[in-house]
Image (cartoon, rainbow, N blue to C red; front, side):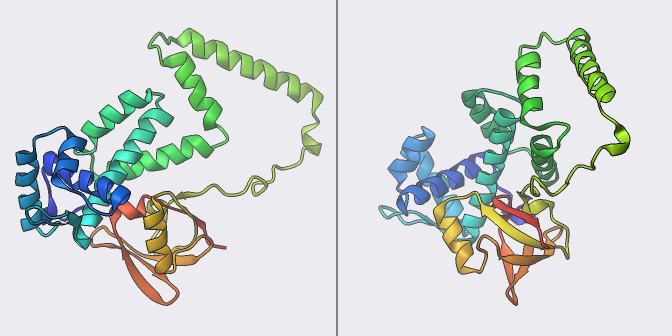
Length: 264
């Protein structure tokens, strides 16, 4: 997360995130673009940009394009990553429609801390990949519980059906001859880099961010299949990884977009 001295108000975080989004789409941002994106007046945008410039987060001069400083990009990516993770959790796990997920993510992104965000990310990965949960489990929750009419009878009925089905299978199967499941058959699921342990060697599976981010990481040696080691998880200090003999410092926003598997 951001250092104490970098703590921004929710409003300034919105402005910083808006600059990042506009820069991603057009390399630079203008006052009128930010005004239209956030639905605020140009004078409010100018005031916010002056504050962000004083804090070394944006490059801003009147009547010129606005860009992010290196540190500003790091903080903006952190805010954007919080937003994406929350939105995907609200829609993909809890089943909110896209509009509601987006609106709630906008409000929540300013309040959650790094610990909660990391746990939500872990939970999302768990429910999607655990054989006892998975997409069917999520879909069942949305279909049966999304209306708010759920009661114990629905769950009891479902469990009874499963138990009855399992009983029939057991009658036809000799447990002594049953083969152990092949844990590696389906392949190990990817997980966010935030879930790796300090000292653990991991393999980069994918980068979920923009092409610009993928290109930037590739220039540092972080390409799909590359193996690297987690040196510091940023508690405290920056998130640092060692790859090809070099140590790299990654922004918190970037870390959430790097998907990895345990190194072999």
